[in-house]
Image (tube, rainbow, N blue to C red; front, side, top):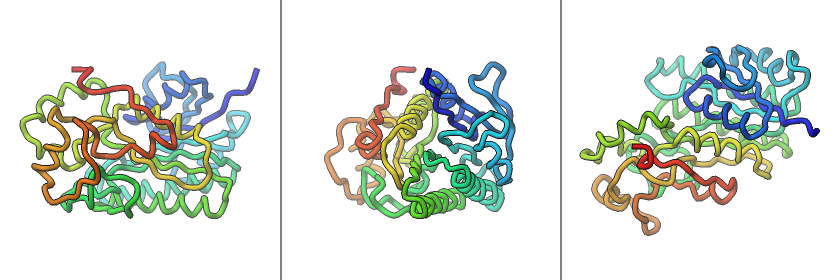
Amino acid sequence: MATKQRVVVTGASGKLGRFVVEHLVDSGYDVVSTDRVAPAPGSPGRFTVADLSDLGQVVELLSGVDEGRAADAVVHLSAIPAPGLATNAATFRNNVPSTYNVLRAAQVVGIRNVVTASSETVLGLPFDVPPPYVPVDEEYDVLPQSTYSLGKALEEETARHFTRWDPALKVAALRFSNVMRPEDYANFPSWQDDTAARRWNLWGYIDGRDGAQAVRRALEADFTGFEAFVIANEDTVMVRDSADLVAEQFPDVPVRRPLQGRETLLSIDKARRVLGYAPEHHWQDEV
């Protein structure tokens, strides 16, 4: 029997991490998960507590000192996940060095397949300054508007240089939109009478199950070097057509192509093309 690919998943107890661990286990991966907080009892995979701010712990984790063999890949989701949850300095001090440590430990161990959680915020959220055009995509330079987003931009740039140093290394930075669980969809009808309520991220979202699919596809993608991908669902959180939303809230922003119905304004074209990403879950099917 072929040996299963071993994947370390950081941030495994987080909102997205739980979906990712379950999906990877169901897809046949040997998952070693880690976080500062243990997952719910009965969660799949094996779990160990680790502090990613300590490079030594990360090297041990990825090298499999306690697991018998090194990991083949790492999915780095661990972070303070949004602005405002901690002070700016604490958010930066936690997130940026931890990502460096994961990349450095992977380099030390010889892991050349890394998927890391970036954020839609690097696109310019909360769009108090309007985006350069819609749908937004990976073609323009990052526009961080918060310390959290600045950290994510620096993490992407760090990964870019790690791949420059090692041309065999692959790092996929997934710019996740606002992660939703199925139970979160009960809130969506309350937004429909106020188009401004969710303009801050162009009315985007990502179902956690589709976020997990994107992680698996990034792990399995055949490329080297650094690539960033916007990861959102293919629709918006609204029932109104996307063209109407843009005309009302961003009347002076160039629209690069005709918008079809309720399509996302966070372009997933690159993720579809390179990763084969195909969202399967839509909020209107859950309410």
